[in-house]
Image (tube, rainbow, N blue to C red):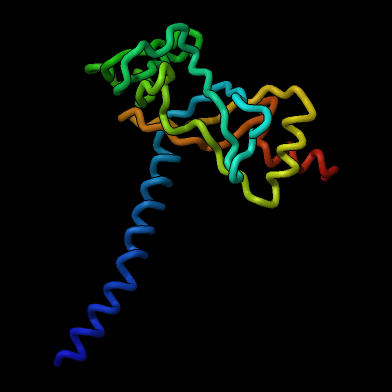
Amino acid sequence: MFKNHKKVFVLAALIWPLVIWGAVVGMKTFNWFSGASLTLEVRGYDPRDLLSGHYLQYEVEYGVTVGCGEGNGPAYVYHPGNPGRARLADNPPAGDSNVVYIAGSCQNWRFRAGIERFYVPEEAAQRLDAILRGRKMAASIEVSVRRDGTAQVKDFLLNGKPWRLVLKEEAGG
C-alpha cells in the first residue's frame, strides 16, 4: 500500500511544475490578446550595452511631461487616447473604464512598469545589435495593457516595422 502512495507522490511532484508553467503561459497569452494596444517610443540608455544577455534594454517614452518626484512607490500613467496628453498620477482612475492606464512605480526619479526590456533570441542578437548601432532608426514598442494597468510588450518596432521583418529585409529576403 505504501508503494502506491509513493508513486502518486512522485507523479504529482512531476506534474505540478507543468501545471504551474501552463497557468503562467495561459495568463500571459490572455494578457496579450485581451488588453488595449498602445505604441510607445523607446530610446536606448547605454549605447555600449544595448543588448545585455539577449535582452534589449531601453527607456520608454510614456509621453509624460512631469516625471516621478523624490518619492518611490506606486504610480500610474494615463493615456487618454493621445500619448502627448499622458499624465502621471498616484492613483488608478476611479469609475472610468475607458481610460487606458499603465500601472507601475516610481523608482529613483523614473517611472517603471516592467516593460523596459525585450527578449531577443540569441541567433538574432548580433544582427539586431549591428542594425541598432549602425543606423538611426525610430524605435518603439507595441504594448498590450489590461484593464488593471498591467502592461506586456508584444513587439519591438524599428521605423514602425516589427524587428523580425527588418532583420529579414536586411538579409535580402
